[in-house]
Length: 439
Image (tube, rainbow, N blue to C red):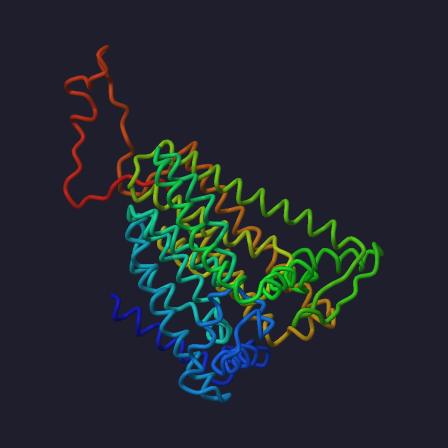
């Protein structure tokens, strides 16, 4: 099955190198990455000599493809090769996570292998696959009973591109719900150690430069494709203040008198969404045996739902952020959660329709393009809502897989021991038969 999945990946990835909508590179970050890479290989240091907007571990990642050549074509092809290697690792990790979480590994791997057909060229012209792969590796370690190492790896993801941090509260809540307080504390400490060490090294190179990398994102206006930006443009259309599209921070943003208030509101929505997912996984885990596939599924679902929330409610929603949603779409397909899989896939596909072909239309505020982005943003919010609903429904009313018998209450004697001839003693599950798992 792995061979078939990798073959599908190779074919779908090759499509993104062909002319046409899947290979459209008219808007890309490769020129920026290449310019950084040339400077780094010439001896310049991020933050001190180069104004670098990404976390520290992104620097060696961007420089690596330039080792074989920093010309336009050489860097483009080498970066694509790196993306293909990361995509292959992604496919393998999806299979491992599906296996650990009671899903179908074949479905997960094939869905992940077909991802380039839904993301198009942005999969190989941005480095977002790297933090996604690191996040999945961290989750696989946690569900494989290695939470300290897993959270340390998650720290590496945070220092590559910050969004994996939203997985931390979910993972800690999952561990605490199983009475694994020490592992939760030590794992959080391991993540903090990685983050402090890497951030400290960046600050040692240039404290002012590292600080500017943080303020760069704090000062950035809402990005034109984000949900807050769409609401600001809508307010303008309804006469609720003038929204201006401006070029700022290497992107197009929206400025409006209500920008600060709306960013605060969406930040609160993000915190609320992550809290809801965290409570859901803690509630579900407190009623399940640690190590069950269904329980590990809830951790993975809540973690990837939190990542989707980061994209859905943040003030920046660059098209490549939809790469973060690929694992959730693939695993939902493997878990046979059709509504969640369809919504996640639709959000990714709508982004391919919009970007880059109609990005200029969005900037020019063409109504059809703005509606397309607004629908995509709404579908992404729906993805978060479906993930949260599944967690909370599973906690209160578990659904059991087709073909697997539901659990039967066990009568007990006054001493607490199971009664002879009880339902449990009469129910035997033959080796290899499926375990009951909540849906």
